[in-house]
Structures are given as C-alpha cells and as structure tokens.
Amino acid sequence: MGLMNDCLFCKIIKGEIPSVKVYENHGSIAFMDIRPVNPGHVLVVSKEHFKDLLEADDETLAAVAVACKKVAQAVKKAVNADGINLAANNGEAAGQVIPHLHWHIIPRFSSDDLRSWPHKETPIEEIKEAAEKIKNNF
Image (cartoon, rainbow, N blue to C red; front, side, top):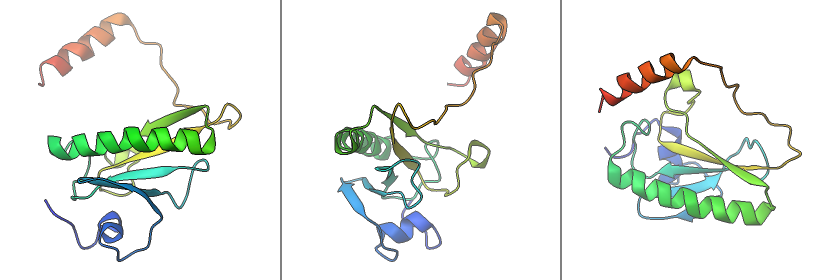
C-alpha cells in the first residue's frame, strides 16, 4: 500500500516531521505520543500505510504485534507502571483520529484515576445471537 503524502504518521515515518523514536523493526516504528495519557505513552505504527487493523495484511500485523509486546515490556519497566493498556481505535466512530494503523501503549498506575469503558448487562440470548452473527461472517 505504501506511504501516503498527507498522512501525519507517514510524514513521521519519512522523517518529514520530527518524533522521539524508541523502537523499530522491519514493519513498524514506535515513538512517544506528544499528547500522552500518562508518562511513557508510546504509539506503535505500521511503516506501510494501512487505514486500520481491518485493512492491514497479516505480515504487517505480525510485525506490529511483536513491536507492541517489546515496547509494552520496556514501557512498564521504564516508568514502573502497575499495568499497561494496549488500544487500537479502528474507524472514526471508535475514536480513531489518524487513519493509519497504530496502537497506543499506555502505562497505567493504580493512582491514575483513569476508567475503562462501561460494561452493559446483556441477556445471554442477545450475546448468543451476536456470536452467531459473528461466526457467520468468517
């Protein structure tokens, strides 16, 4: 798919926009988020331009997944985090701001007062119905 001229992350990958890089492998780079949720927040980005996880090829996803693991381990140690969130927003409705495959590595601390999204009590029949629809789409 290549790099796109107007994509912010593609410009960072090409060196047109500065970044604070912490890791790189054959298919991805990782750099510090300039608007971090917590200190140590890193973005792991595919080198090749894909809009999101759903568009990316398996080889790219494998490289990004390996980078996420390595970066998450390093971040957790470096900032002495109590935990790590890995988040990938796919699509505008899911909160994706930059349409380029990327994962957030967010260090978490027991005292950071961040909350995850609310869970909903759902009847088991609705859960089973959703599962059947998912199974039928492979």
